Image 1 (cartoon, rainbow, N blue to C red):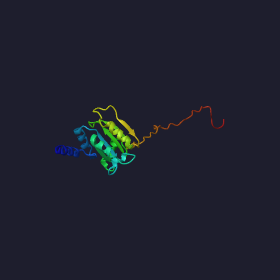
Image 2 (tube, helix red, strand yellow; image 1 turned 60 degrees about the vertical axis):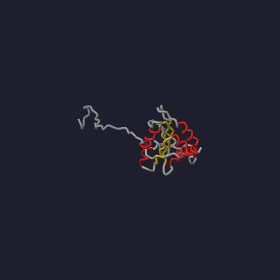
Image 3 (cartoon, helix red, strand yellow; image 1 turned 90 degrees about the vertical axis):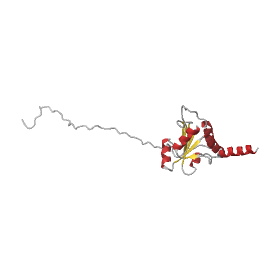
Image 4 (tube, rainbow, N blue to C red; image 1 turned 180 degrees about the horizontal axis):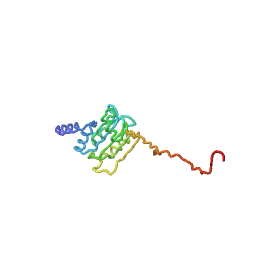
Amino acid sequence: MAVVALTTSLSTANLSPTPTWLNDYGTAQQRVLAVQKPMAVFVGSGQDGWGKVLKDGIVDPALKRLLADKYVCLYLDTDTTSGRALANSFEVASRGLIISDRKGTSQAYSLSGTLTKAELAQTLEKYADAGQALRSTETLVREAPAVVRPVTVSYPTYAPQSYVPQYRVVPNYYTSGST
């Protein structure tokens, strides 16, 4: 009985109730390949900015457990240059969530903006077992895109023309002076 109690306590001690947050995309990509779990990329700003993806407050323990058990978690802090650059490449403004497949090669879900706890729970459950080959990405945009593309205005161009004076041919029957 002591052996069972000791074994149970050791195995539950290895399970973390909170996710391990990585902040390097390359490291997260390697981890995805090693453990064959999808990657959840949270985009935010500041310490614990990943929680700011939620409209209605702090992430509850059940969501943290789901993230810890089913995902490789990456946090992109848009206060840093590298975090902002990677968020821009994902086309996420100041806050958002991107979920990959189990190989980390395809996006299953992309959100630019915020969501509720219920939406987050539903999304995490839906994509926890994202297959190897995805056919499409579910994309939601609730905030303006991170990259503002300049508006190009085209004006008509006028080719320079050489000036050609307009002369009128006057018949010779006009004379000047007296006769």
